[in-house]
Image 1 (cartoon, protein in one colour):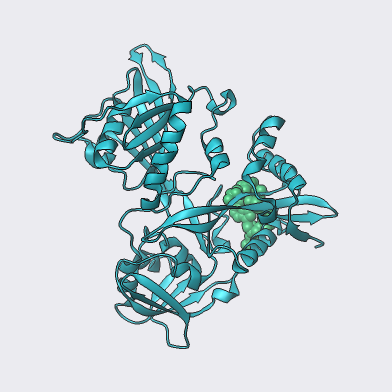
Image 2 (cartoon, rainbow, N blue to C red):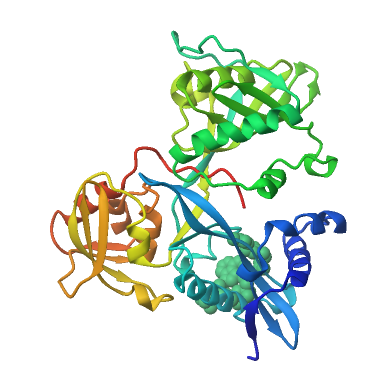
Length: 402
Ligand SMILES: CC(=O)SCCNC(=O)CCNC(=O)[C@H](O)C(C)(C)COP(=O)(O)OP(=O)(O)OC[C@H]1O[C@@H](n2cnc3c(N)ncnc32)[C@H](O)[C@@H]1OP(=O)(O)O
Protein backbone atom coordinates (compact mmCIF):
# COMPACT_ATOMS: atom_id res chain seq x y z
CA UNK A 1 0.00 0.00 0.00
CA UNK A 2 1.34 3.39 -1.00
CA UNK A 3 -0.04 5.45 1.86
CA UNK A 4 1.70 8.63 2.93
CA UNK A 5 1.05 9.83 6.48
CA UNK A 6 1.74 13.39 7.58
CA UNK A 7 0.13 16.22 9.50
CA UNK A 8 -2.22 18.53 7.61
CA UNK A 9 -1.68 22.05 6.35
CA UNK A 10 -4.14 24.81 7.26
CA UNK A 11 -5.71 24.48 3.77
CA UNK A 12 -6.42 20.79 4.35
CA UNK A 13 -8.63 21.38 7.40
CA UNK A 14 -11.64 22.15 5.22
CA UNK A 15 -11.44 18.91 3.17
CA UNK A 16 -11.04 17.05 6.48
CA UNK A 17 -14.10 18.82 7.90
CA UNK A 18 -16.11 17.96 4.75
CA UNK A 19 -15.14 14.28 5.12
CA UNK A 20 -16.18 14.40 8.78
CA UNK A 21 -19.64 15.89 8.32
CA UNK A 22 -20.35 13.53 5.41
CA UNK A 23 -19.23 10.52 7.50
CA UNK A 24 -21.57 11.59 10.28
CA UNK A 25 -24.43 11.70 7.78
CA UNK A 26 -24.93 15.47 8.02
CA UNK A 27 -25.81 17.88 5.23
CA UNK A 28 -24.07 20.73 6.98
CA UNK A 29 -24.11 23.96 4.96
CA UNK A 30 -20.67 24.85 3.58
CA UNK A 31 -20.46 28.14 5.51
CA UNK A 32 -20.97 26.28 8.77
CA UNK A 33 -18.33 23.70 7.96
CA UNK A 34 -15.84 26.51 7.36
CA UNK A 35 -16.84 28.26 10.55
CA UNK A 36 -15.66 25.44 12.82
CA UNK A 37 -12.30 24.64 11.27
CA UNK A 38 -10.88 26.92 14.00
CA UNK A 39 -11.51 24.09 16.46
CA UNK A 40 -8.84 21.98 14.83
CA UNK A 41 -5.08 22.12 14.88
CA UNK A 42 -3.52 21.18 11.51
CA UNK A 43 -0.13 20.37 12.99
CA UNK A 44 -1.84 17.92 15.40
CA UNK A 45 -4.08 16.33 12.77
CA UNK A 46 -2.65 13.35 10.95
CA UNK A 47 -3.84 12.58 7.42
CA UNK A 48 -3.37 9.51 5.24
CA UNK A 49 -2.85 10.30 1.54
CA UNK A 50 -2.73 8.16 -1.58
CA UNK A 51 -1.73 9.69 -4.91
CA UNK A 52 -2.12 13.09 -3.29
CA UNK A 53 -5.74 12.48 -2.17
CA UNK A 54 -6.75 12.70 1.50
CA UNK A 55 -8.22 9.30 2.44
CA UNK A 56 -8.70 9.90 6.13
CA UNK A 57 -7.56 11.93 9.11
CA UNK A 58 -7.57 12.05 12.91
CA UNK A 59 -7.15 15.17 15.00
CA UNK A 60 -5.97 16.09 18.46
CA UNK A 61 -7.23 19.13 20.33
CA UNK A 62 -4.89 20.52 22.98
CA UNK A 63 -7.01 20.59 26.12
CA UNK A 64 -6.95 19.88 29.84
CA UNK A 65 -8.74 17.05 31.62
CA UNK A 66 -9.37 17.11 35.36
CA UNK A 67 -7.67 14.12 36.97
CA UNK A 68 -8.13 12.61 40.44
CA UNK A 69 -6.23 14.67 42.98
CA UNK A 70 -4.14 16.80 40.62
CA UNK A 71 -6.88 18.76 38.82
CA UNK A 72 -6.65 19.89 35.19
CA UNK A 73 -3.77 18.28 33.28
CA UNK A 74 -2.95 18.32 29.55
CA UNK A 75 -4.41 15.44 27.57
CA UNK A 76 -4.76 14.67 23.87
CA UNK A 77 -8.43 15.15 22.99
CA UNK A 78 -8.69 12.83 20.00
CA UNK A 79 -11.39 13.95 17.61
CA UNK A 80 -12.78 13.95 14.05
CA UNK A 81 -11.44 10.51 13.18
CA UNK A 82 -12.72 9.77 9.71
CA UNK A 83 -11.94 7.70 6.62
CA UNK A 84 -13.43 8.26 3.19
CA UNK A 85 -16.18 5.63 2.63
CA UNK A 86 -14.47 4.50 -0.59
CA UNK A 87 -11.28 3.60 1.30
CA UNK A 88 -12.50 1.92 4.48
CA UNK A 89 -11.10 -1.39 5.80
CA UNK A 90 -7.81 -0.83 4.03
CA UNK A 91 -5.94 -0.04 7.22
CA UNK A 92 -6.19 3.77 7.08
CA UNK A 93 -7.44 4.11 10.66
CA UNK A 94 -4.74 1.76 11.92
CA UNK A 95 -2.07 3.97 10.29
CA UNK A 96 -3.64 7.09 11.79
CA UNK A 97 -3.82 5.63 15.30
CA UNK A 98 -0.24 4.36 15.11
CA UNK A 99 1.16 7.69 13.89
CA UNK A 100 -0.86 9.67 16.40
CA UNK A 101 0.27 7.58 19.38
CA UNK A 102 3.88 7.67 18.21
CA UNK A 103 3.72 11.47 17.97
CA UNK A 104 2.22 11.70 21.47
CA UNK A 105 4.93 9.45 22.86
CA UNK A 106 7.45 11.77 21.23
CA UNK A 107 6.83 14.75 23.53
CA UNK A 108 3.03 14.98 23.58
CA UNK A 109 0.53 14.37 26.35
CA UNK A 110 0.84 11.15 28.41
CA UNK A 111 -2.86 10.33 28.05
CA UNK A 112 -5.28 10.42 25.12
CA UNK A 113 -9.06 10.30 25.36
CA UNK A 114 -12.00 10.29 22.99
CA UNK A 115 -15.70 9.71 22.58
CA UNK A 116 -16.19 6.66 20.40
CA UNK A 117 -18.81 6.72 17.63
CA UNK A 118 -18.92 2.93 17.87
CA UNK A 119 -17.74 1.03 20.93
CA UNK A 120 -16.16 -1.76 18.87
CA UNK A 121 -13.56 0.48 17.22
CA UNK A 122 -11.00 1.64 19.76
CA UNK A 123 -10.26 -1.24 22.13
CA UNK A 124 -7.84 -2.73 19.58
CA UNK A 125 -5.87 0.53 19.79
CA UNK A 126 -5.51 0.31 23.56
CA UNK A 127 -8.41 2.61 24.52
CA UNK A 128 -10.84 1.57 27.24
CA UNK A 129 -14.06 2.92 28.63
CA UNK A 130 -13.08 5.04 31.62
CA UNK A 131 -16.24 6.98 32.33
CA UNK A 132 -19.93 6.78 31.66
CA UNK A 133 -22.87 9.17 31.57
CA UNK A 134 -26.49 8.59 32.48
CA UNK A 135 -29.46 9.69 30.46
CA UNK A 136 -32.05 10.93 32.95
CA UNK A 137 -35.73 11.40 32.22
CA UNK A 138 -37.63 12.92 35.11
CA UNK A 139 -41.33 13.80 35.22
CA UNK A 140 -42.24 17.43 35.84
CA UNK A 141 -42.69 18.46 39.49
CA UNK A 142 -41.08 15.30 40.92
CA UNK A 143 -40.84 16.12 44.63
CA UNK A 144 -37.71 16.25 46.79
CA UNK A 145 -37.33 14.46 50.11
CA UNK A 146 -38.52 16.54 53.07
CA UNK A 147 -36.04 19.11 54.44
CA UNK A 148 -33.89 19.44 51.31
CA UNK A 149 -32.30 22.91 51.56
CA UNK A 150 -32.59 24.96 48.37
CA UNK A 151 -31.11 28.04 50.05
CA UNK A 152 -32.46 31.57 49.66
CA UNK A 153 -30.84 32.61 46.37
CA UNK A 154 -33.21 32.78 43.43
CA UNK A 155 -32.58 31.15 40.07
CA UNK A 156 -33.13 33.75 37.34
CA UNK A 157 -33.36 33.48 33.58
CA UNK A 158 -30.70 35.65 31.96
CA UNK A 159 -30.21 36.71 28.33
CA UNK A 160 -27.38 34.91 26.52
CA UNK A 161 -24.98 37.87 26.32
CA UNK A 162 -25.31 38.61 30.00
CA UNK A 163 -25.17 34.92 30.92
CA UNK A 164 -22.08 33.82 29.00
CA UNK A 165 -19.37 35.50 31.11
CA UNK A 166 -21.07 34.31 34.32
CA UNK A 167 -21.46 30.80 32.93
CA UNK A 168 -17.78 30.68 31.97
CA UNK A 169 -16.70 31.85 35.44
CA UNK A 170 -18.89 29.27 37.16
CA UNK A 171 -17.66 26.50 34.88
CA UNK A 172 -14.06 27.45 35.67
CA UNK A 173 -14.87 27.44 39.37
CA UNK A 174 -16.23 23.88 39.29
CA UNK A 175 -14.09 22.30 36.55
CA UNK A 176 -10.91 21.75 38.61
CA UNK A 177 -12.91 19.78 41.18
CA UNK A 178 -14.72 17.39 38.81
CA UNK A 179 -12.71 14.51 37.42
CA UNK A 180 -13.39 14.17 33.70
CA UNK A 181 -14.39 17.78 32.97
CA UNK A 182 -12.42 19.44 30.21
CA UNK A 183 -11.11 22.91 29.46
CA UNK A 184 -12.70 25.14 26.81
CA UNK A 185 -11.14 28.04 24.95
CA UNK A 186 -13.35 30.73 23.38
CA UNK A 187 -13.80 28.84 20.10
CA UNK A 188 -14.71 25.68 21.98
CA UNK A 189 -17.21 27.59 24.11
CA UNK A 190 -18.79 29.12 21.00
CA UNK A 191 -19.08 25.68 19.41
CA UNK A 192 -20.44 24.03 22.57
CA UNK A 193 -23.19 26.63 22.91
CA UNK A 194 -23.72 27.38 19.21
CA UNK A 195 -27.34 28.32 18.89
CA UNK A 196 -28.27 29.06 15.27
CA UNK A 197 -31.67 27.89 14.04
CA UNK A 198 -29.80 25.01 12.35
CA UNK A 199 -28.56 23.69 15.71
CA UNK A 200 -31.93 23.56 17.39
CA UNK A 201 -33.70 20.65 15.69
CA UNK A 202 -37.17 22.02 16.39
CA UNK A 203 -36.38 23.08 19.96
CA UNK A 204 -36.12 26.59 21.42
CA UNK A 205 -32.99 28.71 21.67
CA UNK A 206 -30.91 28.03 24.77
CA UNK A 207 -32.28 29.30 28.04
CA UNK A 208 -29.73 30.32 30.67
CA UNK A 209 -30.87 29.86 34.28
CA UNK A 210 -28.37 31.31 36.72
CA UNK A 211 -27.80 30.97 40.43
CA UNK A 212 -24.88 32.64 42.28
CA UNK A 213 -23.30 29.18 42.61
CA UNK A 214 -24.33 27.43 39.42
CA UNK A 215 -26.30 27.42 36.19
CA UNK A 216 -28.32 25.23 33.91
CA UNK A 217 -28.51 25.71 30.13
CA UNK A 218 -31.43 24.07 28.35
CA UNK A 219 -33.76 24.04 25.39
CA UNK A 220 -37.54 23.70 25.43
CA UNK A 221 -39.85 21.90 23.08
CA UNK A 222 -43.59 22.55 23.18
CA UNK A 223 -45.95 19.58 22.88
CA UNK A 224 -49.69 20.10 23.27
CA UNK A 225 -51.63 16.89 23.79
CA UNK A 226 -55.31 16.11 24.48
CA UNK A 227 -54.65 15.75 28.19
CA UNK A 228 -52.70 18.97 28.37
CA UNK A 229 -49.20 20.28 27.76
CA UNK A 230 -46.39 17.71 27.71
CA UNK A 231 -43.44 19.85 26.62
CA UNK A 232 -39.84 18.72 26.99
CA UNK A 233 -36.96 20.43 28.73
CA UNK A 234 -33.57 19.29 27.43
CA UNK A 235 -30.61 20.08 29.68
CA UNK A 236 -27.41 20.95 27.83
CA UNK A 237 -25.23 21.66 30.84
CA UNK A 238 -25.81 21.62 34.58
CA UNK A 239 -23.11 23.11 36.81
CA UNK A 240 -23.43 23.58 40.56
CA UNK A 241 -20.74 24.43 43.09
CA UNK A 242 -22.80 23.81 46.23
CA UNK A 243 -25.52 21.38 47.38
CA UNK A 244 -28.00 24.28 47.70
CA UNK A 245 -27.32 25.39 44.12
CA UNK A 246 -27.77 21.81 42.91
CA UNK A 247 -31.15 21.61 44.65
CA UNK A 248 -32.28 25.08 43.54
CA UNK A 249 -31.32 24.49 39.89
CA UNK A 250 -33.01 21.09 39.85
CA UNK A 251 -36.16 22.68 41.31
CA UNK A 252 -36.00 25.32 38.57
CA UNK A 253 -36.09 22.75 35.77
CA UNK A 254 -38.46 20.33 37.53
CA UNK A 255 -41.00 23.07 38.26
CA UNK A 256 -41.02 24.59 34.77
CA UNK A 257 -44.62 24.96 33.58
CA UNK A 258 -46.08 23.21 30.52
CA UNK A 259 -43.41 20.51 30.67
CA UNK A 260 -44.04 16.77 30.75
CA UNK A 261 -40.49 15.58 31.19
CA UNK A 262 -36.99 16.85 31.88
CA UNK A 263 -34.32 15.10 29.81
CA UNK A 264 -30.65 15.26 30.69
CA UNK A 265 -28.64 12.93 28.51
CA UNK A 266 -25.14 13.43 29.92
CA UNK A 267 -25.56 13.41 33.70
CA UNK A 268 -22.85 12.02 35.96
CA UNK A 269 -23.34 8.44 37.10
CA UNK A 270 -23.30 9.76 40.68
CA UNK A 271 -25.57 12.76 40.03
CA UNK A 272 -27.25 13.62 43.36
CA UNK A 273 -30.75 13.93 41.88
CA UNK A 274 -31.37 10.24 42.57
CA UNK A 275 -30.98 10.90 46.29
CA UNK A 276 -32.73 14.27 46.26
CA UNK A 277 -36.04 12.90 45.03
CA UNK A 278 -38.58 11.44 47.44
CA UNK A 279 -39.26 8.69 44.89
CA UNK A 280 -36.07 7.87 42.99
CA UNK A 281 -37.88 5.45 40.66
CA UNK A 282 -39.62 8.38 39.03
CA UNK A 283 -36.35 8.84 37.14
CA UNK A 284 -35.70 6.68 34.13
CA UNK A 285 -31.93 6.07 33.91
CA UNK A 286 -29.84 4.67 31.07
CA UNK A 287 -26.04 4.40 31.27
CA UNK A 288 -23.73 4.66 28.29
CA UNK A 289 -20.01 5.07 27.75
CA UNK A 290 -18.52 8.54 27.52
CA UNK A 291 -14.73 8.96 27.72
CA UNK A 292 -12.41 6.26 26.41
CA UNK A 293 -8.89 6.66 27.77
CA UNK A 294 -5.59 5.52 26.25
CA UNK A 295 -2.44 5.45 28.36
CA UNK A 296 0.26 6.78 26.00
CA UNK A 297 3.18 6.45 28.42
CA UNK A 298 2.68 4.30 31.52
CA UNK A 299 5.19 6.15 33.69
CA UNK A 300 4.18 9.71 32.79
CA UNK A 301 0.46 8.92 32.89
CA UNK A 302 0.36 7.10 36.22
CA UNK A 303 2.46 9.81 37.87
CA UNK A 304 0.11 12.57 36.69
CA UNK A 305 -2.73 11.79 39.15
CA UNK A 306 -2.83 11.02 42.86
CA UNK A 307 -4.09 7.87 44.59
CA UNK A 308 -6.39 7.21 47.51
CA UNK A 309 -3.95 4.92 49.35
CA UNK A 310 -0.26 4.09 49.32
CA UNK A 311 1.03 1.00 47.50
CA UNK A 312 4.36 -0.41 46.38
CA UNK A 313 3.72 -2.96 43.63
CA UNK A 314 5.15 -4.22 40.36
CA UNK A 315 2.78 -4.09 37.37
CA UNK A 316 3.52 -6.11 34.28
CA UNK A 317 1.90 -4.25 31.39
CA UNK A 318 1.13 -5.64 27.92
CA UNK A 319 0.63 -3.17 25.08
CA UNK A 320 0.50 -4.44 21.49
CA UNK A 321 0.45 -1.06 19.78
CA UNK A 322 2.85 0.93 21.96
CA UNK A 323 5.78 -1.43 22.67
CA UNK A 324 7.48 1.14 24.89
CA UNK A 325 4.83 0.40 27.51
CA UNK A 326 5.31 -3.37 27.50
CA UNK A 327 7.46 -3.88 30.56
CA UNK A 328 7.40 -4.35 34.34
CA UNK A 329 6.79 -1.09 36.20
CA UNK A 330 7.17 -0.42 39.90
CA UNK A 331 4.36 1.85 41.13
CA UNK A 332 5.28 3.38 44.47
CA UNK A 333 2.67 5.67 46.01
CA UNK A 334 3.60 7.69 49.10
CA UNK A 335 1.08 10.14 50.57
CA UNK A 336 -0.95 9.67 47.40
CA UNK A 337 1.88 10.73 45.07
CA UNK A 338 3.17 8.15 42.60
CA UNK A 339 6.63 7.33 41.34
CA UNK A 340 6.76 4.94 38.38
CA UNK A 341 9.95 3.24 37.20
CA UNK A 342 10.91 0.27 35.05
CA UNK A 343 12.02 -2.71 37.12
CA UNK A 344 13.45 -6.21 36.63
CA UNK A 345 11.51 -7.42 39.72
CA UNK A 346 8.79 -10.05 39.52
CA UNK A 347 5.25 -8.86 38.85
CA UNK A 348 2.54 -8.55 41.53
CA UNK A 349 -0.21 -7.81 39.00
CA UNK A 350 -0.28 -8.51 35.25
CA UNK A 351 -2.50 -6.28 33.14
CA UNK A 352 -3.37 -5.15 29.66
CA UNK A 353 -2.80 -1.43 29.04
CA UNK A 354 -6.58 -1.12 28.54
CA UNK A 355 -7.13 -1.98 32.20
CA UNK A 356 -4.97 0.98 33.23
CA UNK A 357 -6.90 3.26 30.83
CA UNK A 358 -10.19 2.10 32.24
CA UNK A 359 -9.15 2.67 35.87
CA UNK A 360 -7.20 5.87 35.21
CA UNK A 361 -9.99 8.32 36.07
CA UNK A 362 -10.85 6.47 39.27
CA UNK A 363 -14.27 5.15 38.27
CA UNK A 364 -13.51 1.55 37.38
CA UNK A 365 -12.42 -1.13 39.86
CA UNK A 366 -9.44 -3.12 38.62
CA UNK A 367 -10.77 -6.04 40.68
CA UNK A 368 -13.80 -6.15 38.35
CA UNK A 369 -11.58 -6.31 35.27
CA UNK A 370 -10.18 -9.73 36.23
CA UNK A 371 -13.49 -11.21 35.08
CA UNK A 372 -12.93 -9.51 31.73
CA UNK A 373 -9.47 -11.13 31.56
CA UNK A 374 -7.71 -7.77 31.40
CA UNK A 375 -6.06 -8.14 34.83
CA UNK A 376 -4.53 -11.07 36.70
CA UNK A 377 -3.22 -11.11 40.25
CA UNK A 378 0.12 -12.80 40.94
CA UNK A 379 0.77 -11.81 44.58
CA UNK A 380 -2.27 -12.46 46.78
CA UNK A 381 -3.77 -9.20 48.10
CA UNK A 382 -1.95 -6.97 45.62
CA UNK A 383 -4.90 -6.49 43.26
CA UNK A 384 -7.25 -5.39 46.03
CA UNK A 385 -4.69 -2.84 47.21
CA UNK A 386 -4.06 -1.57 43.67
CA UNK A 387 -7.75 -1.40 42.84
CA UNK A 388 -8.68 0.65 45.88
CA UNK A 389 -5.69 3.00 45.39
CA UNK A 390 -7.00 3.88 41.90
CA UNK A 391 -10.56 4.71 43.04
CA UNK A 392 -11.48 8.40 43.13
CA UNK A 393 -13.78 10.38 45.44
CA UNK A 394 -16.40 10.82 42.69
CA UNK A 395 -17.38 8.96 39.58
CA UNK A 396 -15.55 10.52 36.63
CA UNK A 397 -17.85 12.59 34.44
CA UNK A 398 -17.33 13.96 30.95
CA UNK A 399 -20.39 15.59 29.44
CA UNK A 400 -18.89 17.29 26.39
CA UNK A 401 -18.56 15.40 23.14
CA UNK A 402 -15.54 16.92 21.42
C1 LIG B 1 -13.02 10.00 18.18
C2 LIG B 1 -13.86 9.94 16.97
O1 LIG B 1 -13.77 10.78 16.14
S1 LIG B 1 -14.96 8.64 16.77
C3 LIG B 1 -15.45 8.71 15.07
C4 LIG B 1 -14.98 7.55 14.26
N1 LIG B 1 -15.42 7.78 12.88
C5 LIG B 1 -16.59 7.34 12.41
O2 LIG B 1 -17.36 6.64 13.05
C6 LIG B 1 -16.94 7.82 11.01
C7 LIG B 1 -17.39 6.67 10.11
N2 LIG B 1 -16.41 5.56 10.05
C8 LIG B 1 -15.19 5.71 9.50
O3 LIG B 1 -14.80 6.77 9.04
C9 LIG B 1 -14.33 4.46 9.44
O4 LIG B 1 -15.16 3.34 9.27
C10 LIG B 1 -13.44 4.25 10.69
C11 LIG B 1 -12.60 5.49 10.94
C12 LIG B 1 -14.29 3.96 11.92
C13 LIG B 1 -12.54 3.03 10.43
O5 LIG B 1 -11.61 3.33 9.41
P1 LIG B 1 -10.92 2.19 8.51
O6 LIG B 1 -9.81 2.82 7.77
O7 LIG B 1 -11.96 1.48 7.74
O8 LIG B 1 -10.33 1.19 9.62
P2 LIG B 1 -9.12 0.16 9.40
O9 LIG B 1 -9.26 -0.43 8.02
O10 LIG B 1 -7.84 0.80 9.72
O11 LIG B 1 -9.49 -0.91 10.48
C14 LIG B 1 -8.70 -1.16 11.60
C15 LIG B 1 -9.38 -2.23 12.42
O12 LIG B 1 -10.58 -1.69 12.99
C16 LIG B 1 -11.70 -2.48 12.61
N3 LIG B 1 -12.82 -1.54 12.44
C17 LIG B 1 -12.82 -0.44 11.68
N4 LIG B 1 -14.00 0.19 11.79
C18 LIG B 1 -14.74 -0.54 12.63
C19 LIG B 1 -16.06 -0.40 13.12
N5 LIG B 1 -16.84 0.63 12.76
N6 LIG B 1 -16.52 -1.32 14.00
C20 LIG B 1 -15.74 -2.37 14.36
N7 LIG B 1 -14.46 -2.54 13.92
C21 LIG B 1 -13.99 -1.64 13.05
C22 LIG B 1 -11.29 -3.16 11.33
O13 LIG B 1 -12.05 -4.32 11.11
C23 LIG B 1 -9.83 -3.46 11.61
O14 LIG B 1 -9.75 -4.57 12.49
P3 LIG B 1 -8.43 -5.48 12.58
O15 LIG B 1 -7.32 -4.59 13.02
O16 LIG B 1 -8.80 -6.51 13.56
O17 LIG B 1 -8.23 -5.99 11.17
